Image (cartoon, one colour):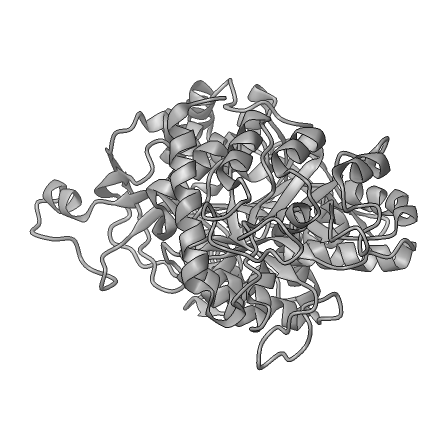
Length: 574
């Protein structure tokens, strides 16, 4: 139920005919910023967005507080975001305090949700909570500022009520010093698209800065801004700033992916003046466009960054381990191995057992509770699932929908599969509806009589959605006498993802060897994709040999790809 004492700032949620109707609203004087503050906001609003919207975007702003009176900056933030969207044409905003805004059928209207200083337990309905997490994990955006770090806690006291929300956001808690604490803000990622407004320089700022303990980790998030403790102590005339955690690591803003979802959080939003600060507004506009899906931004966790991975980010390349490499282990064990190898990505496999505690296949039959455990295991390891192999996708509506619903819930971008050609019309419609690709996988000619060669895949894809294409298994190509370099030139942008292999010989008995040491022309293939401007969803490292002791060979392949990445990135555009 809406709070009758506080009307909405930039939009309104109305109950009409038993259903939720969201529409723009006229501002109420008692809720809007003062005329003076409004003039300050209007004078500093950016008029040009950093990215051109791919399509009309809608941002749902929720500023509900439960058990707490609400921050004085809420109205200013609502107005600032609304005006930024209007003046730049980047997005439309709707503000609601009605929990039914989070029903699946309502969230589908939006590209992102902005929880504006939302303190307390906004709703405890498990259906609405599942709706929000699936909206984000399946590819929606989530923005939070300041008090959002204690959303979905029981207030007062910030008693945890939904642990996964804190994991999704990236932090829990609200420990702070003075409400106008002056600190030195460090740019942890000065070349990041969201931090360009700061010109590569650290800067002084005064606000109420939260220090986080639970959930926050550089293994989970890409830190953009953090507190420079030594410089801040000097500003405050102290020997040191009070410590809240042993490592003294206090991130102030970050981005991350939760599944496919784009998440941004910043603690800098306590005081209303933040939202008439021109640089902070530009920062938040860029963050909104990131969350909405228009400003591509790297999110690999800070602890994962190496020169090789930074080169791969520059190129738009993503290296991950295909689960078949470790299919003798459980999914959870495979996730641990991927994390130990220092990679942020992997693929999934439908016939792999999940874990000792969940001795079931990782497939659409898993319950929502079991999928939640998978999400949290991936999150704890700092690993994202990009692809998923399933042998067949049914051509009937119900069967196809169940597979794509599973794909949405696990946050994948691309299925790898070998469905019947007559199922492709139905599958193509679901690809477009769910924004999930299907990459047709090849085995040998006997097992894959149509998909084994690139020309067969092009034939069945002709006239169909661009979300259908090829999953190139280089091992089978090489064993079938197909030149991977020539095949890539044939497929071009129909090559959606690759399962990379290098073999010891060109024969049906050829087995995997570390990349660059065999006959597979691995480096030439990688550079050909770059020349063609083809960016696979994932360069999938599938090492199908020496199953139980392949970690050294897998690590050598990762190192080889890193060297090629740095070489290509240093050369500039093709």
